[in-house]
Length: 114
Length: 110
Image 1: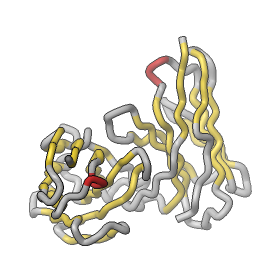
Image 2: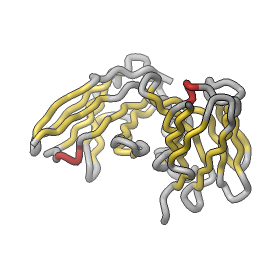
Image 3: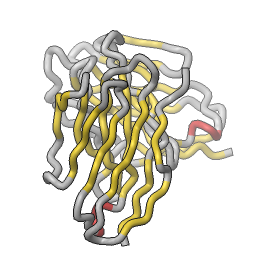
Image 4: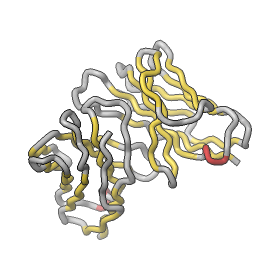
């Protein structure tokens, strides 16, 4: 099976702009989670979607939003970008049938806000 | 989710065994211990998960004492390619809201 794919891999934006990142999970996986990774805060959970519904949410402002489509692909959107939003954004998918809850991460999208 | 504490960094040499201990004093009865590995500019990768005693797979072993307040990830005979950050996580086995701590940066030297 193909792994989790994320597009684009790199992105440069300026403050105030908005950005949309895309994630395609492993075929058959219906849960998609998003994480932000920065040198200062480490890996932080953003939100999780399952069957097109947000099931869990981390402690991020409303500027961060997401959605999931019927084919399990997911997008996350960040509006009114701030310098501090510069980070590696990781998407992970999982198969609810796996007892250990293993999450499979994509390579990430490196967002730079200037 | 239970907070975890692990060393910030560890150095080792090729062929040696690396043991990383993680403290999780407030682990709950239904919590599992899971370890992920992350290489630079890549997403984390699941290594191993356990609840008690010892778990072993083709990559690592996980030792969990009876009180479950700590756990040790053991990497046998490391190679240069094992240089990575290793994260200890505690929570529900199938939880999809992973809480990562600071991780342990392992550097394997020739």
